[in-house]
Image (cartoon, rainbow, N blue to C red; front, side, top):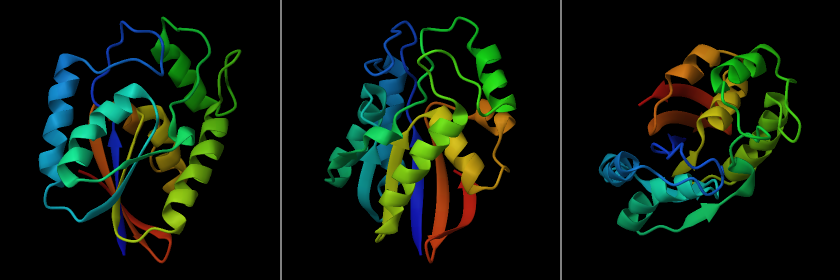
Length: 181
């Protein structure tokens, strides 16, 4: 049996509209530093992360503390929305109602799921021991939605925090149990 710890990035600076380079806030940096204490007594063998700055900066203190490299996986990146959206809540609700809904130059939630499921399977196919995957709220929520056959949905996504930790037990390559930590 292995455990996958999914870590949603710490609080991002929303004044920076460029998604890939948006940094953490001061509080986000403090929270990122605190994560290492949670993982201090866990038997983490590997760390994977989206390449976005806020995810890398969220998991760097833990990786350094555990003396592990961060394996960057491009397909763990957040959903592409197209241009900046002022009414993000409305847009997100539309996407959860219709998993094929997307804007110009954006991704539908079905496209996000397809990308994330491939990355997740590549990571967990050769899993040996417990791991951390650091990523994004919407991307994780869509992945969780598929892994739990729809039990994790829009309401659960709305309750996600920055940072947040979810623990999944995997046995014989199959999800056995999901737990919010």
